[in-house]
Image 1 (cartoon, rainbow, N blue to C red):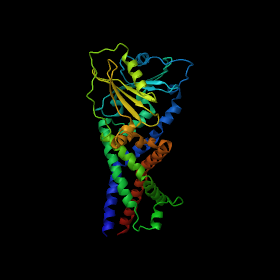
Image 2: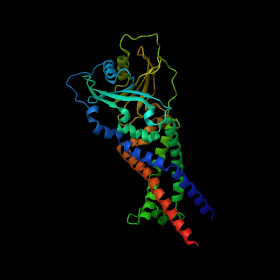
Image 3: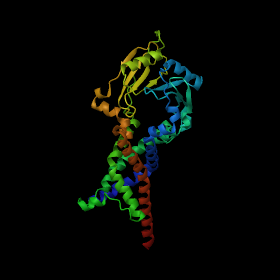
Image 4: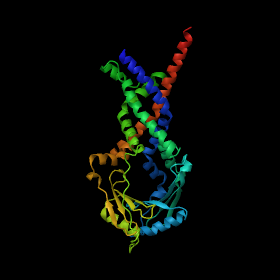
Length: 377
């Protein structure tokens, strides 16, 4: 009797957590499916702006010269904040100008501007100028992270909906667990009866698929919450550039040259320009195009080009540091390569479908209860 009452109470909690967070989980799940393979889809859809033909015996133009070309292409009212510098011969350079209003409500109000320009690093040719606010994968990511409601409102809703979803996963496993722990009972909960009527098929799709992806969704959910609660955010550095010093050589070229010499096996660099006058150039050297965790961070004096700080490589981090560094790769499945991405895709697909199948189960029970109440007199 106690077990029955416990499951009844848990079922009630499971229902209302699902009703509260269902729509958000549905949106976050299906947008997560799309974004899992965003890199592969971009390589197919945006081939002309991402890839170039390498001319024979030609060196890349100085980074400072490419920066000037990008600034002219985007216009004086756009301040470049980041450059993506691929070290592969057949890849373009990307320069990004982005200004945010994080307190604004709604996606379109959050961006003052968000533009990208792609350049051929050998010739300086402008390959494409993109209004990134309207780019498909940017919209998908915004829907996934904050429902396109802005950082304050949307982030709050998604964060606590994911908390509800984690609780739903645990309560769902308890409700799935059979009353009799024997092989026949477990087998019933592990197989989908595909030839059954809609009611039974829908019930199996909710229960059985939910069981199979439990651990995957738990990892995806918890790594998502790591971002939401700021547990992966690095502490702000107190290092500053010396505004009284000036370099003999253009700092942008000097900094990139030093970074390449320090990490010659880098796949691509993210070159972040400072907003404050005494801010440092923050440069991240990604050692792999597939894994974001394998990276080294640098801070340079923006005026002299002097290396102020070099972060540890992934293998030299503590266990907790490695887990934090791997957060994105665990969230998207890229930590395990293509098989991991496929698993993350399928798990996200199931996550998006669970609110639907759960809603149908609830509606059917409600309909059945209404019929019983009408039949009582």
